[in-house]
Image (cartoon, rainbow, N blue to C red; front, top):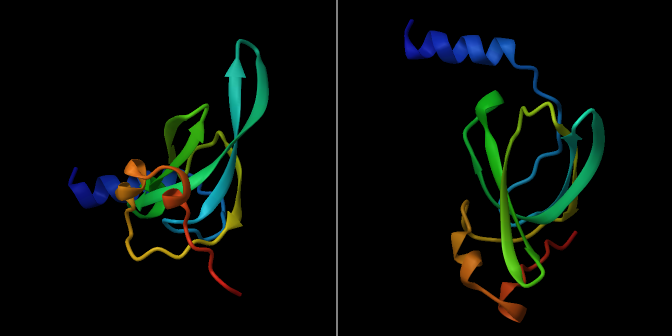
Length: 117
């Protein structure tokens, strides 16, 4: 099986939900399901999108937030069945597709300019 056939097989077999278009620099809230034993609950993870990688059902995105003075990053697959919804809170203006420099910024320097409507 060639690489193209394998990618086509993955794209056909994985259903992808429709989410709003977002990019690096946007502040989003991702609501996802957590399984604890036999129970399920919804949890929200709100932060700044650092990057989007890939395309189609194999795409992922990284979200970073500060929790208790510690930076927390989480990588979400876009086609994960556990993602319930993605809400865009702010549309940020950044000049790069991957804003890893954001990891080193603290306080006021860690602000991202908001897009004017």
